[in-house]
Length: 183
Image (cartoon, rainbow, N blue to C red; front, top):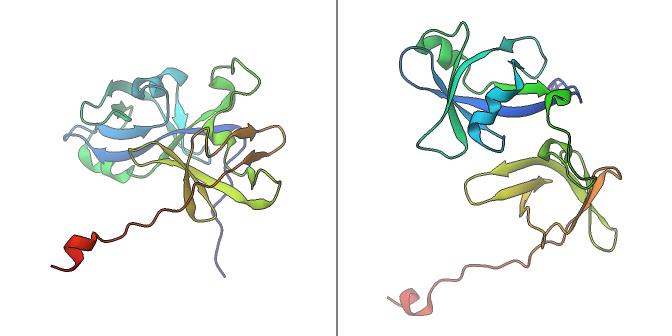
């Protein structure tokens, strides 16, 4: 029987994921989901997804090699081995520490996960599993498929109603170059 991952409390929002260590003194890279990478340090102590471990950032700088990453040091993490042990740990903050949203139709990406996805005609298309960014813009993962998170593809997000509207882009297939195919 397969076990399910423990549910993340609704009161927590993921702000980053620990990546590779940086140097030998315990510094590490963190992929951040904040407006700017340094903002991850603005919310006070962070925790793991169950709130069992608390991480106090003692320094945080933008990573020169990646616009979505920060180099951080954490209280009590003093060597490379300790930093390596944290690789892959998601860092959370309590939702009440986040800034209040300015407009009623604003939302955090964390609010999208679990929303029902419907076509413009109201036909059910699935559920948002995750929001990703592999470097070319935000993508919504819906039932194993990825869709660009743009106004054209997602014209309406209604967090209060628990759904968003998806207009899937037309499929385009790459065809081999006819001239190159005969060579």
